[in-house]
Length: 184
Image (cartoon, rainbow, N blue to C red; front, side, top):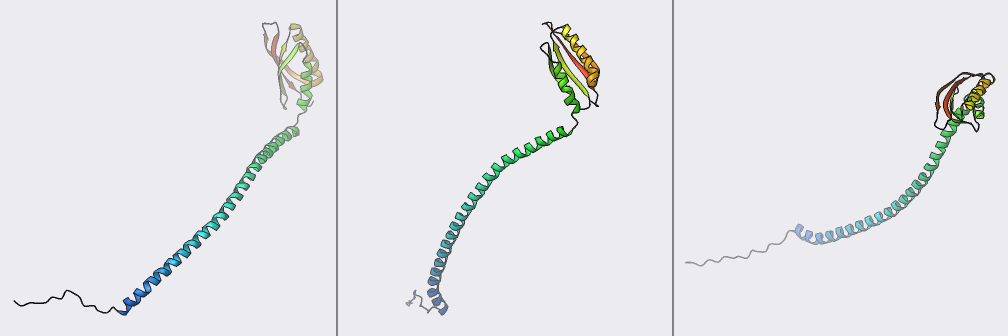
C-alpha cells in the first residue's frame, strides 16, 4: 500500500483588491453613519424640545382666550336675554293699551274692605273679567249698582255675573264678565 498525503490546509490566496478596500472602508463608513445618526437624533430632540415649549405657550394662550370667551358668553347671554325682554316690553308699549289703562283703575277702585277682587283679566280687544268676593248680599247689590253706574261713564257693556256661590262664612263669590268699548 502506498502512502498518500492529503493536505487539509487550504492554500491562502491573496484577497481581491475590492475586498481589501471594503475592509478598510466599512469601519470608517459605520463610524460616520453612527456619528450622523447621533447628530440627527440630538438635533431632532432639540427640535422637539423647542416645539414643545412653543406648543405649551400656544396651549396656555388658547386656554386664556377660552376663559375670556367663557366670561364673554355669560355676559352676551345676559345681553341677548335683556334685548329679548326689552323687545317684548316695546311691543307691549307700542300696542294699543288704552282699554287696559282706562279699565283697570276703575275695576281696582271697586275693591274695598267688603269687596275683594281675586283675579282680573283684560284684553286689548275689549273683553274683561274678574272674580269678586263680597262680605254679604248688601255689598254685592252695591257692587252691581256701582257697575251699572260705570256702565254709562266708562262705556262698559254686556255686564254678566255668573257662578254666584255663598260660602260657609256668609260671603259671596262670583265672577263678572263685561266688554269695554274700544273707543274709550
